[in-house]
Image 1 (cartoon, rainbow, N blue to C red):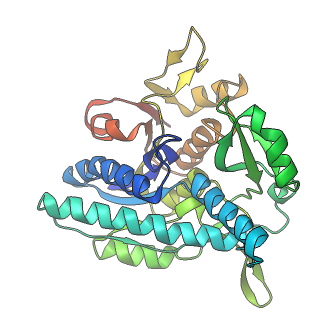
Image 2 (cartoon, helix red, strand yellow):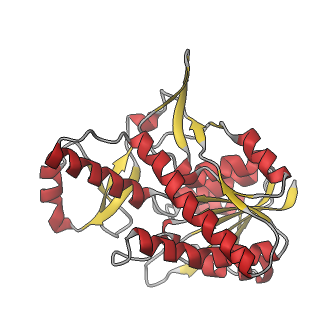
Length: 316
């Protein structure tokens, strides 16, 4: 177990701050702010791996593709390629921003991005039951127009924030580029990997083949963090702490909970599917596979979460 290897799963709020700040330039600015908190951790002598969400970015690219087909007849971009595109574009912004931040602080080290494939099972139930939100949020009064324009979309309400498109989300089974990532870590690099949960691929008689889906990035992060023997998994989100009865008048923040307590809270239905629930489930998998600690908090609290106990800490 490498106690000084931390896996940081960056949430969507680290990339897009609001509906008013959704451009590529806005995203780069948000990432520049987020990596300052990652650099704080590196100053504490941690080596880091970073994953990131890509739900809105996937949605933007797919809508651009659909508009281009409708207006010009240009071919659609397959979902699996869109995931790969976002790994490259978001990874570029993260590695550039973090390297600039480290250089500005005179901290040794460099960050690189690995375009990462993740094996899924072709028979995974996720392909039959689309559940992973992608793209922007739509208000209820937009639904009729969206369904008319995109009749093959599946739309669901996402944690009270509006309606979003959902796509297949199979379970991650194996990270293809794991040996490459290990080599980079051994050479002292910080690594951006399994962006957007990884590019979903299946094994065939002819080798690997990409499939149209989006893997949950927290589950993929948990899988890889455990395989790389990271001691700490940090799941970045929009709130400082996990809470019971979230959004209700008697909301109760949680500073620390055990695996058993977290499982009890899941059974009671405290965590929203598609929002906090997969983060808690990812945390439990990591801990059950030998991880020492999971912290769930907002990016700006990462340093104080590690050094002073802020955020929510989940322990075996």
